[in-house]
Length: 386
Image (cartoon, rainbow, N blue to C red):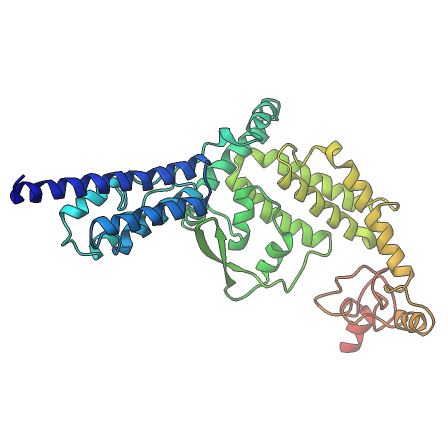
């Protein structure tokens, strides 16, 4: 055979060898995708094959982009993405790069990354159970779940659209996430947002690969009485109805229920109603099969947070009777002596966050000593100022 014939066969032989090696690399990726080999074995196979390719074709394995492309394919598989058949590193792309070695690396950087493939929720372990359960759900709950899934597809876009909507109610930006995802709204933030004169502090939150920034109000004030709750609940109810219009009757009825509890209990134990409300809304936001008006689903919470024998109530009273620390002797004497003094926080504009039986000081007026009001409401103090 002549030298010219040998020179013509050498490129063909090299091309065929490169094709086999690249197919072996692709097979390693496919085996890893199928679970037959681990990540380490896949990396070892790819590296070995490309080193063998370097021995056959000078400079082929020195191109780190070829190895990196296969690493990206493995990374895409880990992240649940499907590798692009036309991406760099596949057999077709590599052979085309062999035919055009002069292309600049910067051109590859401009190529779009493969998009994340959409996961089929029907393959989740709980999918069949949810399907059977949703057929028995209340129509309003089913509609709520449908909208939660819709907003969750692009939560950032949904919040952006609300911020530009002329019909959107006034509401803290930080709480729109809870509204759109169906979680319990923090009424303390809603209440504090009304008394925050300046702009809210910016907070960055990540959901998957999405990152967005919102402002969180400083909780200078907290919901501590019936009036505070009514104000905060009204705003939270309007915002929730804006995103879930079908829940208007449910939210109004729930507001009447909580108002009835406030009216049935003495003001000194209204904090129990506040705790009960938080627990109910937390459960509804976590367990997606109850309405706020399903009283029977919250019987245990009513017992725990409101009844005198409830775990939370009993624990608070036991802590108060033991001085809050279980100590005795001088520690107990010190607690008793402080209990005779009027609470400064109770007599301030902000008020005391503790219950009267939990606070180390008396919730009484610093002027007249009465326990029904603080010094700001005391008529004797007003008379003295006059």
